[in-house]
Amino acid sequence: MKIELTAKQRLVFEQAVEGQRRLRYEEWVEKVCDFLETTAPNLEEEGHCCSVFQSKPVLNKQPDVLFLGYNAHENYGYTGIDRKRFWKGNPSFYEEGARYRDPWKIWYRPYNAMKFAHYTEPMEDGNFVFMNAVYFGSSKIRQLERIPNIQPAIDKCLEFTKKVITDIFRPKVIVCFSISDCFDRLNLKFGFDAVVSFSPSHIINDKPYQCKKIIRMGLWEGIPVIGIPHPSTRDFSNDDWGVIAHFLKTIFMASN
Image (tube, rainbow, N blue to C red; front, side, top):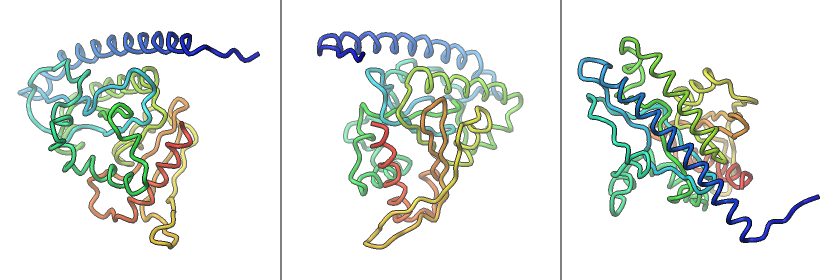
């Protein structure tokens, strides 16, 4: 027998769920900060910079999408951990007039592609989370991997990331920025289910067009996870972006 909740009962239930999610997130933040504060200062001579979130967390509902990069392309010494960024995101990402976000190709390329597909709602504030899988920045991933004794710290970051994504946020869809550097690395560690690789197609300018890029898709603890080329990829045409955007639109809409 199906039980229908009244509007008031539904509101009470949703508030209770949000409260539990917020509490679990707060506990997660403290564990991550404790880990970073004890680990980052001891990586290299001057310690190592840390970056977890670009966006604010979404705790009042399931995020429509979680965008996941492998790590920040930053390379400087340890400057401490700002707990406020776990709640308010990167201040530059929300700077008045979006002076940082709008010209940042990591953001504007997928956003403009979704605008072409007439479906930017998942990328509007309050509907997405944007974070890194590994919290130590570097100019290149291999530069990070050359740091002595870094692998246990990387593994710990990935475990924290799995926890917050699959147990706390539970986004409707995960999009990995980079197949080789993000999707494949996470798949190797955690073993996604039902992984497939393919080139999506769509009608572009009244003609069938098949994307020249491969994307991957699987399930991570039951959540659709999609690997697309990194937005900074140079040989990535507007048509390729358009096809991928339409594919993402289909997945986003099916997940609602």
